[in-house]
Length: 134
Ligand code: THU
Image (cartoon, rainbow, N blue to C red; front, top):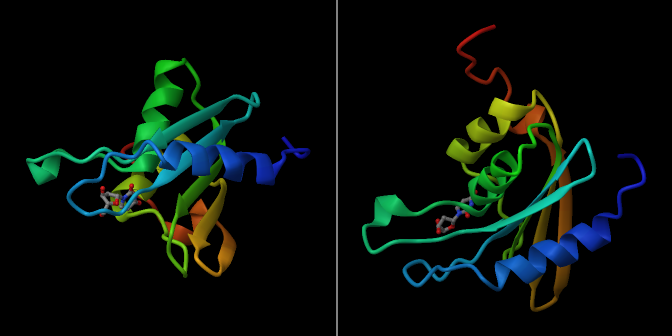
């Protein structure tokens, strides 16, 4: 996974963000998960009139990964229109941590002035994650 094309992942995240269903917050999010085997899974946020029924883009991508029989995410790209770019919420961090102790997290903001990018890691965003079995 060392020769991964981050620009191509960002493009995929941008494309899936366009499909986000966010009529309540108007805050569209796209996510891409890449697994150890090189497979790619996309997700977007899907809101609901019963607000608690909303699912975030990152978890939406993770669900696709699991449904495909994959379980080792190594990169997560998240795209919004904000500067600074949005960082995964606490629940999404915990869900990502279910499948990896660490991974690259690429945060992208598509603003009117251009693109901002920040790279971090899951271990940095969620140190000392809860684990049922240690
Ligand atoms: N959202 C995500 O998709 N990912 C996050 O990590 C944080 C928030 C979504 C949920 C909701 O649809 C909208 O952004 C505003 O909170």
